[in-house]
Image (tube, rainbow, N blue to C red; front, side):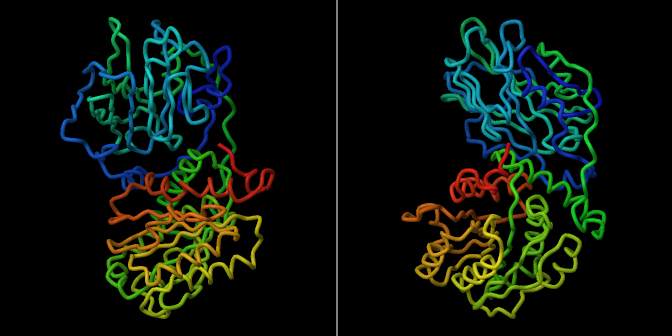
Length: 457
């Protein structure tokens, strides 16, 4: 992370932590309004159970179990610091973050920290959980919905820190040993000088600032977009990069294809702009992974049609042409096998060394489960991963059972349903869209293949 005073953080053996704190991993050139729009305010990490204890800053509670789970909402990166009685780390192994996700007794997975208090290193008496904005350059005044839910045995507690403005690092809570028993304390302390300032407090040496990173290039064609759409696109592209990094896939390059359900039952959703907003929100996936920042687009009705490619600079015009109302050219019923086969015909003309991610929007009501399953099985040898996204509240048939579809050499499909896509924050949407794709790339391509070589944390 970089900020006003951030520098290169080092201990005697902390090169990875130093790189994490000092390297500008993402750019941030976007307005606060676009950021605030991407995440609903005040969303907890998960629905609160009835027995939840709401913590106020400074409040502490005993932990009834040595097993502790903390889940955090909001577009943030997490770091856990294992501390001695002096309140300092002993070295690199005490720092748990995305590039070093585990230490004795502590493991970080995306938005969740799991701690086994009995498994911590000798002399550990405190674990601090720290959040920083996922997009470099932001402060917590630009990040909405930060809250945590802690579970330990019979205890479930929540904490939402007070609104911050200039802070770019925040200690959310700490687990600490007192009188032979472990407790949790809600903290909410912010640092305007970010992780570097926080690191100093925890006994980590901070060296001088490294040279500023080279300017990043624009997304191809973005200069043709209206300012507000351009700002949102850039913000969302960075969030896609964050989601990929969580999967160890920040360097992944891929072809991205979109398939839109245009069956008769979708007419109302087209009129309400659901498909237009959905396409606008997935365009950044292509901007992040496709070298040309474009998507090949198909319509699925009674038959499948390939339509104009979606390029970043043409986004407003494309949405007006294909999502302002339900396109009727493909017919009014569903034909999933035809859409799968049409996409495969296109992919067969392209380089197989480039993995393909298909984002297939469907409103439910699969017409022929047997033929759809057969088409999915037949597609296994092709370099294509099919991510189905349910936008309606209807029966999804075979699509909802894809994870249980046995007998395939490689699992080439994923599915999740969104009853209301507008209620899902961008960060959560992108986590779900790219959750399975990197794993498929690793399973489909042999070791040493360029597609796998592009995967990196």
